[in-house]
Amino acid sequence: MSGVDDRKGIQAEFDGLLGRFRLKVSLTIPPKGITALVGPSGAGKTSLLRAIAGLTRLPGRVVMDGEVWQEGRLFVPVHQRALGMVFQESSLLSHLSVRDNLLFGYRRAQGPKTMSLDEVVPLLGLEPLIGRSTDNLSGGERQRVALGRALLSQPRLLLMDEPLSSLDAQSRAEILPFLEALHRTLSIPVLYVSHDAEEVARLADHVVTLNAGQIVGTLQPATPDPLSPLSPNQIRDLARQALEAGIKPNPSAR
Amino acid sequence: MADVIWTTVKLASFTTLLLLVLATPLAWWLARQKVWWKEIIAAVVALPIVLPPTVLGFYLLLLLAPSSPLMELLQPFGIQSLAFTFPGLLIGSIVYSLPFAVQPIRNGFEAMGDRPMEVAATLRATPLNAFFTVAVPQARRGFLTAAVLVFAHTVGEFGVVLMIGGGIPGQTEVISVKLYQLVESLQFGEAHRLAAGLLVFSFVVLLTMFLTERRARKTAP
Image 1 (cartoon, helix red, strand yellow):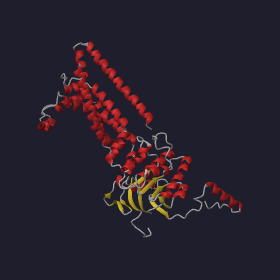
Image 2: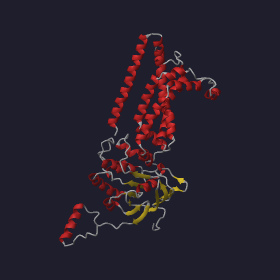
Image 3: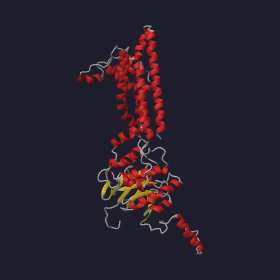
Image 4: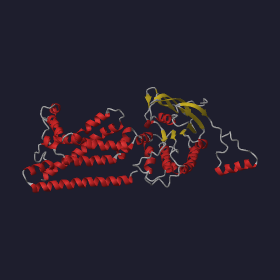
């Protein structure tokens, strides 16, 4: 960190074995914005996320906004950590309705509520789903509910484990704008695991690359992409204009 | 006849209620533990399925008879012997039907997987709260199956209740034992009524369970 306030954000260090896989990382996540965690499958992205959440116990240290979650023998259990987690595959509680899923964490959250149902429902376009059971929801709808549920648990850190990877291209295209809207409104740090370059380009402020259980590169803050606020059609128009102006695509710059 | 039916229903109801309470933590432990030796415990729990009821009844009789180690322990509480008593019969039924309660509940917990409990934890639910608000409702079909099987199995048991109950009218005489005594004394008319009643009862119980399961499967994912 640049020394403005060392106590803000998340410091996470782990060095431990998961079976024969060794995760050895030291990571600082800035207090705001989306940090993408990228890398090939098997790099340890999910393991790192689970270790930060406390779902997997690895030797190490986790400090969140100056609050120690793990250090030495101290280990704050998952349910006492103010975090929200969106899992890779749909993890809605099937015995509860959409509304009760959304409110599961909200009802159990301690302290003042900064996120309310009235706020989260329109943000994620959940109005038509709120009265339904969790059966017969599409993959994209389920992940939106899961995201809303995580936000309503009043997290101070949001962990997302490839939330779009189990979705087809159409559902993914449908949910991305919601994530971008969230990105603009959310004031808590987000750690976002992904192996999709487009998602990362559209959402991430910082990028951390993991390989074989180690951090091999960090990019922060990412240079703002001048194309990211544009729609695909606008980008196509720009490309056409460039071609018409005589600019040839460079095959090595892929 | 009425007191025989009453004793049977009372025994089956108490056995079912107590077993659901006792089997649930055991089933949870068996479903969640990752150590290999849990299967030793699982095998011990499952023993009553394969053991002849008379073997079980014999050991239970020794355990519940006066001056057994268990009765020595209970002596300070004024209990000398539980053989040929209703509480003794209840203990026997609980042991005898234990696998029929543990196995379906364990299956229910295992079918749920780890994820719902992890989700609950990330949503601030304490482990105990998550158990009652997530695990139990998720495994509800396992509980239903366990309750029906235990009740029906207790109504149908014969060897164990004969060994440790002795068939004392009004206390430990249940339908299956009564039926045996009726046949022995050649009272076939009475025997027919009891046998047919038990047959219809068992069929209705199983049919109800299968229909409920079918409905649950339609509404659950």
